Length: 246
Image (spheres, helix red, strand yellow):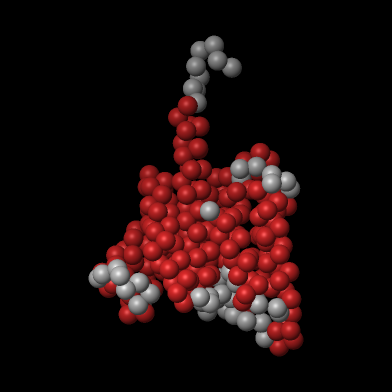
């Protein structure tokens, strides 16, 4: 899901004429002339990286390309913009974190999994809490994003805000981390189906960014759920100090 989200965002680069992920502020001055060429090059590199990964070739290099492009063309632009758009700035961080998560499935990097998972949990916590408060602060705007056939727009706006805040807090509490990751992944996957895809098909334009981002972040949440489960399973099946076992 994460890599398919990356691929969708890469394709949209060609239509937007800029690096589509996380909606960074447009280049200014002399740098404005590097687009749309930079958008085409970065989109192509991202698609090649995803394809190479699925072909089970040079996976570390493929993920490194994704990390490098997101950092250089999204994160640094948010930093240059003095982090004035924290919601989208956090998106650039969890897009990078998702690639690092997949890296920890490679044998040579598995030893760093605990640290990478915790880094992802902290970034997602900050993102979810920021988004949750934004739902309350800009409720009139958020409720208008909900499609007309869904009733009680204001109720679902506040309900989503509470879920985001609860999910973010749950990610930091060890006993609830797996459940919070699973429920957050389901929630955002629901937005992918009920909100982002219909809006993109209707309104077009940058609504397609929400499609790829929601698919990617729900995939990250499900990855965390699975990786935490593997860690717990390894711990529960180990037999310490068993007689005759070396």
